[in-house]
Image 1 (cartoon, rainbow, N blue to C red):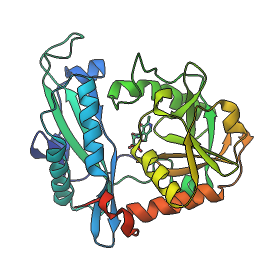
Image 2: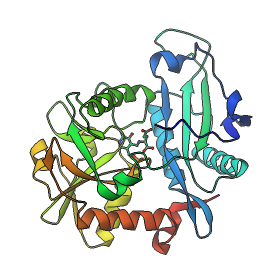
Image 3: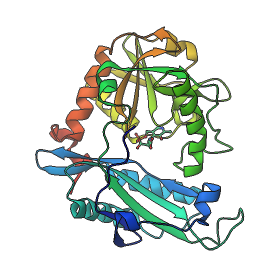
Image 4: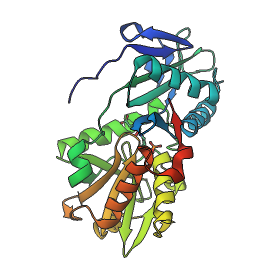
Length: 305
Ligand code: PPE
């Protein structure tokens, strides 16, 4: 695992600070109690310069996550969009991953987060596809986790809260131990939810299926993009609760997410799915065309730096 590739500046509450100076206190509330919300966004090189994919929608989701934690967001989505574009310009990056974070900071301890101040940061860095370039081409082996997905009434999966990801980390460590590239989490009822950092799609008999948000998943922006692109390509997409058997019996299965992009799954629990299939490859190509500014129809999803 390569170390993080550093850049010049990080945005902290309205200031651009040097990368090495972007620090918080060890008694920051979020470090102890997971009281933070975040986003993952990507900026791609396009023929008309760097552009951020669905930036406003990511910042709106951050606002919804903050609301769930009863954080009064100190910055509006529009202000965070501007801050992000300014930061990418300042770091002179042609493409990058973007990580906004809104967290309960330093000042009080104890479980009630409300008295703790809210701190907002945005960091950017060059980040290759999360599961690797080879994964995009050849697919990955995935395994169903023995850990269950966080539940709607304990740690709502629909929001991107930092504390939620302890659950993802349990599953990811176990998957690595078993030789899988990624885990697939089921909810307590046994239905398929998602990967540790990706949504999931299943293809069988030319029908594309993905779990509904109510089964306990993040309402992914890449997921939404894939649904739109599939419909454009004349493919049928439905939301359906899926069992592990639906995964084993699938013609194709793939993950999608901002960091991971669109990744074919070639086996689940040692049951072969096969080489990346035609639907996955068509959607992967369509996705890269959109994010890289090669599809005019979706130009409105690109926010230019
Ligand atoms: N589910 C989870 C649990 C998740 O974390 C992500 C994003 C998705 C689905 C896909 O959502 P979207 O990016 O809106 O399509 N995970 C982010 C963080 C990954 C990480 O490991 O860090 C991401 O992809 O940026």
